[in-house]
Length: 381
Ligand code: CAA
Image (cartoon, rainbow, N blue to C red; front, side, top):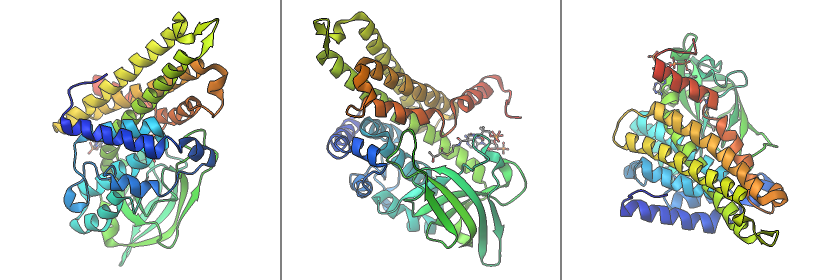
């Protein structure tokens, strides 16, 4: 599927395709097995500008609009969704929040390193007891004469053990979403500990961590926003678009692999692609992938025209994540027994896709957000 793209968009997509084929595809299975992406991939992503998309050039960014961002994420996720996740979090959730809400000093301190990939960011919102109900988080930040002291625990934090800066959401006021502020915490601050979570079902190359903040003292200028919850929700709107773009890439990768295999694999004296039931599997995969892409590009288009896009981002994320799971599952079906071993990529597509219906807001949360927008009735109260 294609729509009219500018020459710039096409060139960028071509660059992302080449980068993915050369730097990601040959290593993705090993990173998955070893549960670690080669760390030097991150500055390489910075060098080609993929970690600076949407950020002003004066802060090290490479510019580009939201559609450009989606095109790159689709290609990267076709190679490895875990790599896409590193970009979505370090650039999409952290650097873009700093670019939007930070002081000039905060931008100068963090953006050049994050966009170059010499530094990495993580987004520390989720806690052991607060996942979907993010507004009830309990990590506490207390004001002192010298700044702030933070105490609490975060969990399932993508990039957690690799990060140089953590965007930490902590309670500075009363209960509920209004009492939450956002802080930029250098991860080498005394009392900040990140412990890697091993044994994930998918996205195994990513450094996912549990974080403990034990009397972490930071100066006043670590505060990014006193309206931390709104900052988080705004970041997650774009985050959901980026997850959706990644799901499109993973679905496309699974479809391409299944198509190739179905044309080669012979049973009953002919390629299995010639069987109607296999064609049905492939046709469903193609429709799901294209529908997910169209929903995702609609979000990018709205955002690029400065129009509201939160509900459309929920729709895209909901649809694309569920589609990625279905498409990858169909791909395993086409591969048969060979889909069940890690010599072929389709099992990994399925395992990696599974988390996308959970993180950055579960499918159920997306449905309730869409329902709230449709009806005006808030199911969360
Ligand atoms: N943009 C800006 N502001 C927003 C907003 C948005 N999209 N959504 C809500 N707000 C504002 C509201 O306007 C409201 O402000 P006012 O009181 O001034 O009107 C305030 O934020 C509170 O909003 P809600 O009443 O909607 O708050 P809630 O507690 O009912 O939120 C929820 C409910 C939508 C379920 C929210 O908690 C949510 O999105 N939960 C899912 C959490 C999530 O996605 N976690 C992902 C973790 S991060 C991650 O996965 C990253 C990773 O490492 C991979």
